[in-house]
Amino acid sequence: MSAHVTARIDLGALAHNVRVLKACTDGRKLMVVVKADAYGHGLVKCGQAAVNAGADYLGVALLEEAVALREGNVPGPILAWLNTPDDRFAECIARDIDLGVNSVATLKAISNAAYSVDRVARIHVKVDTGLNRNGVTLSDLPELISALNKAEAEGTVKVVGVMSHFAYADEPSHSTIADQIAEFKTAVDLLDVAGFELEVKHLANSAATLALPETYFNMVRPGVAAYGVSPGQEVGMAKDFDLKPVMMLCAPIVLLKKVPAGTGVSYAHQYHTSTETTLALIPAGYADGVPRSASNQGPVLVGGEIRKIAGRVCMDQFVLDVGDLDVKLGDEVVLFGDPERGEPSVEDWAEAVGTISYEIITRIGPRVHREFINNSW
Amino acid sequence: MAIVGIGVDVVDLARFSGVVDRTPGILDRLFTKAEQTSAEGHQLPLVSLAGRFAVKEAVAKALGAPVGMQWHDCEVSNSGAPKISVRGSVAKVAQDQGVSNWHVSLSHDGPVAVAYVIAEKD
Image (cartoon, rainbow over all chains, first blue to last red; front, side):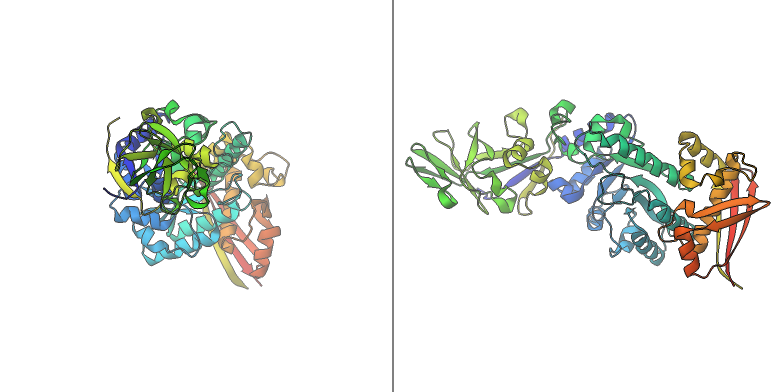
């Protein structure tokens, strides 16, 4: 019996989701976002599976994520977009990794690095159309365009893309969406008129890919949806779009003990048994990504029923009150998986602990064993 | 007299007119109202505006991508030969570099407009 928590990753479900997303965009290119260890699912395996299923591009935040994909022999276009002037670009340029640019300072660092390895860096201009986070604003765009023109003339960079991101990313009906689309179109026009040959223009995240065809341009860039998780309630349930959950988080029962009524359970006795009952110890804690705020809240499938965690979630373990359920040592409990199989969903966990689905899956800890399976859907 | 910088830029006419057709409002982003008209007050044809945009980009190259650059800060006019007047962000960078004279040459040939600019200081 292993004491490990297992994140079972269904690469077949991921491939299915990639095909679904590709089909709904009417022939546009598809960039699948695999940043943050493929949203906690395993970067290289998921990156490779996405490419095999038809993804035209992979997107990551950091250079080291892009390099890890290449070291894992994942082929095809890759974009890393969260770059700073201090990043080490030369290796990425040599490994054919496209780079997001948000400022003249970052461009200069990329241009110098490209010169040092005698290569042409492929650039996606990251435009801030209203999120007011990363990206160049339209008022700063002329200066960046001038610098890009100069760098292209010097032969160190080639502008191949333009991208932006929504402020109300998961509310496709929000009034700011139309304004951001208009800003993005202006940025496209300005880059176009300046003479850059834009291969890809990408604005649509998961929610927009599922709900807003007017945001598609010629490439979409979903992340969370590829993992079978809904980007938000307004968009709908994952199953409404035929998206299959990719991750199932499970752990074995490692101890069972009978206790009397009124027994205080786990740190600070935040749960008391109401009758004589059986407690099951599950070796999964906040160090594994089970939020401590799931204490007395997190739903778990055990013995065919969903029970809430009993008491505090600890660093390495939590307890379930399993009553007289028919369970035995070594039985697997499921924290989340596919609601179609009666398991709690990632969305259920997000709601139970007051966060968003993204945080539940991306915080699954490094010591959780990723087991890759390949169901056909 | 010394040359501070040179700049050359090519604008593809089909691409330029394609963008303007798609988004007429882009003209006001790129050009001042005065720039969009001839000395006689007529709306300039797109081929002329493409040339004026090439001048702006050539000026930016000559100055090495001016910090805070806005397209309106480099204005192109002509009564006979094209002339450059700078203000704001572009004027500041030009002043820092000691630029006192601009020389500009424009050419339209086939599918492109070409501008060549020299920034000179006394």
